Image 1: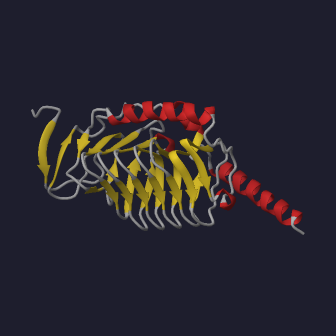
Image 2 (image 1 turned 120 degrees about the vertical axis):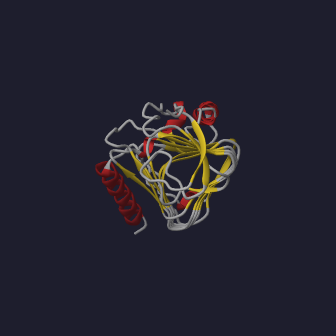
Image 3 (image 1 turned 60 degrees about the horizontal axis):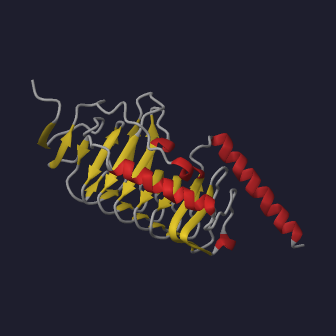
Length: 271
């Protein structure tokens, strides 16, 4: 019988396993379902934020940010540029004490995510597109990319957790999607990024991004989750959308209704 932990080169794999890979990618992995008990990262007070930065937030275009229960803030650089373009349902904490506490909690959460023992280690600069992954901790010492679809399968367990550890960058390429099935929830998906993360135009992303440096959402991208940058800036391009991961379709509809009401009141005030 082989030991439970093996190091091998995978030549033919099934994407539905926790170690599903492209051909000839070197991995260190456990058997399927070995990570069923992966524990969620505790964000502390940072969980109340949709956007949290270290060196400012920039809304670079006409941005629609649907945020029912969560806030934005930046510390130590509290500047927020282009805020007039934002439809925010939440609180702008700028650099206040709430933001400062959230930054402290983010640092602890980032360290927690970064030090979890990985179940799978991918070859450098690995593209997760095309895979179906079960709950677990997935590491690339270099960078992660996503092209096409990445499917996260909870297999009927709504508490299933995914932690992705990128040594350097994370890039969701244009048109890419993260698909949640089997009861998977975006609130249980965590991306720990050693430098910066970029969501390219038209990408549809899920989970909490915790980047050591900056996070950029390019025009037309969407995230069901949070953008949390420890030291750098968060930049959002035109027509980017943040969907509240804690909300259901009903809550999202409520947020859209509230947003529509706000716009109508603004229009009437201008008459």
